[in-house]
Figure 1 (spheres, rainbow, N blue to C red):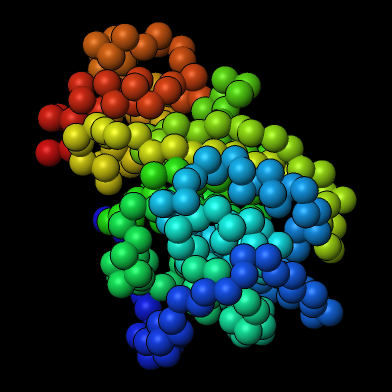
Figure 2: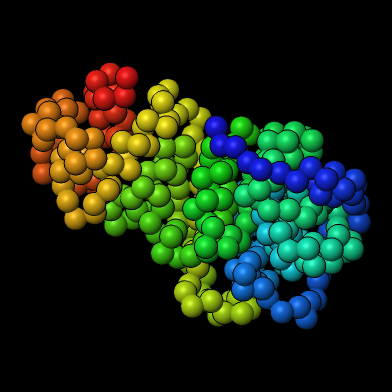
Length: 294
């Protein structure tokens, strides 16, 4: 299970802020300069914000965790629909301004999703069943997704705006899997919903975005996850090489032995890692597990 660092003094201070109960309709007009160090590109299209909120398909009885509410353009639609919204904002200035706005059943907490004790945050806000909606900074997208998939209380579903290229890699529509796509598909089922042009942000990023849905699987393989992903990483260690060569060089095992394992797993000898789905990796792991990962 993932481990996280946490500043308890900051969390306790922020957690004293009670759930606010005001009108769900609010606007936050900011003249703040976006901070490049935080990868801030604020969504500026209201209709897209509403579409993202609607894509989460949550009812008035469900809770939502929003990561990086920014100016609050998406938060207002989440507050209108959800039972409770917990919005985690790393930017102290933005968090302070959002806390002064009139929200309905919405709580703003200043904190870093990668450093905060997420299980504790979920427990203390009674959020054990929840969904995530977020416009993720490009440079930490993979880390955040992995954290959410591996944490103690995984969200039922995530609707995330990410860099378009990353969204396409996660879904792997071109039939080319990657460590990222396998890491997501091991735990969940990803789906590409729609593209968002860069012109809809302020400031405009250099690339377009995409909104994806990641729905948690009810059951995942009962295997040693650390060992499983060490196998996956070995398989992808050199993109241009065949799977047999990557595994042989990574584990210092003869190609004949690797080919024997692959044959038992139903894999062709010349296959590359990008052609293997989660089920293929699990089967290969189960074949070689007793010998290689004892």
